Image (cartoon, rainbow, N blue to C red; front, side):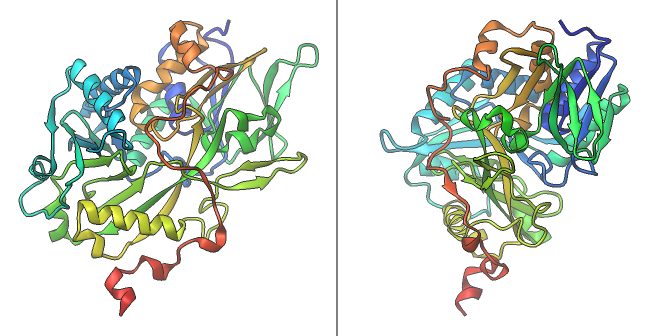
Length: 440
């Protein structure tokens, strides 16, 4: 049993790590150290350091629907989160064709939202979908789509939320140590139990409990655990469009659109007049050889590891993004893209998180496998990890999030097959130009 005065080291200052530190400190734990490889907070290339993330309760799994509603109720507290959360509403779409991708997930999400008391409007056809957008916004026909609008959702300014959570941890005397790349575990000679971590610079941090919350770096940073059989790092494709102030005003009252048939989603513009669009799909792996091991592990490729091309996405994905964009906002599809990014997630095989102690080692715990849907839970996700630390987590959730659980199903919100990233197929600056400009 870990006691409040025991030393706890959390590796990783992302969504899981900072939220966990916050909730442990709120419960009276007094010796919390968070180690972060980046020299700045939030980390430049962390998935949680972004201009926005979707905040939705629209899940086919009732547990996540309820937890998301709990998080939304906290996001709305401006005294705690200022203007981080924007309740634009979220349109959830699926195909009208029976058995098509996204149809069942959207239907089950709708049932859960209704059962939990969410404010929703059913959208049965293209006409009703088009009708929820502001006047003056030209949209696609949505002829083969149906779904619903959940008014109790929207998006959060991700980097701002992370910065605020980091400050909350500091205010509770949590210690952040930046520029620390953890390269291994320290184990007791008598029992093999984890007793701390060692860093690339030779420093050692001892602890009664080590919580690994390093996101998409989990498998590659700790190859001795053979985590690839539980989860893997995938790059998800993102693009941004810079609007003029006049264009931004036209789209500012639009909802978030999430099309589960394609995985495409798009936000209303930020205050800087930037529109982000992305694909929530199987993603890309970047399998690299691991020194000292006869294995290849998917390893994030970011602006930190490649300052020149680290943000580029595959050309095929860029074309898919623009095609999907044309189906929602045809006018925006003709504009140039201001940039792209591969946002790296740690995906479990079934889409559920991994939260709990490593089997046979009570000194080691994991809080990871966000699987592309952790950030919206920033105010509450650490509560689950704190419960696991104190061994009070609901037994059903212990099984749901166990590292050694049986992975029976694939993530129902994703479609497509995981592809290997090929560096010779990445987009160039020229590929970001407006379609007509490229043709001239």
